[in-house]
Image (tube, rainbow, N blue to C red; front, side, top):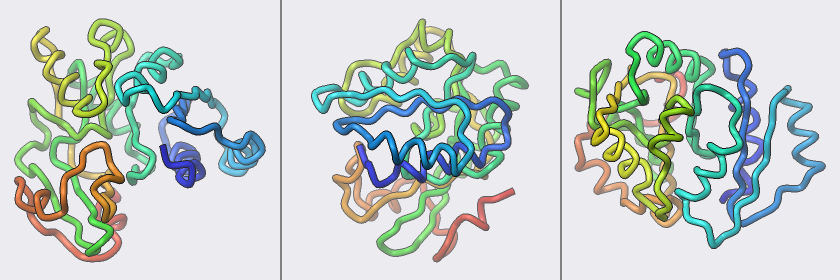
Length: 221
């Protein structure tokens, strides 16, 4: 839903070390300029790109359903347009998925950067390299067949927790990988996100302050 993030999305995907990545781009409430997309695709070398347009009347869950239906790969990664994903992000999660056999993998322990204060915190440090009831929504990596059996619910928010709850009820296992190669970026206005939580509430929820300034060197391995 943020047109100004489109080039960031293509740059993020092009930087991934994992081979044969397909970008399924779901635009919510806007139609991107085709000339801009062609130019950015060429500049960043994004080979496989599928675009799906979602009307503003559709919920977040319905938008994710459009993306899953358009995906051709065996694994589907849900990635948000404004977070930081390091070059080894996808390859690391794929390795965790293959080694554990989990129905979903992601980042339970994860870094959050607050753009207003410049602070970066580590949340849920105890949920690292372990089976977990929860992983960060912007880090889900799931076999496409699992998403066919347990699709994202047609709801406007809490889509990730609703999915994880449904998955566990059907016996699915959730694996939390390491904390690195990912930063959840939170902007000053809570209404800029589908989860409208304040910086103060985030700091008070299983979080510890790690640093101020650019978090990328800290999380890159």
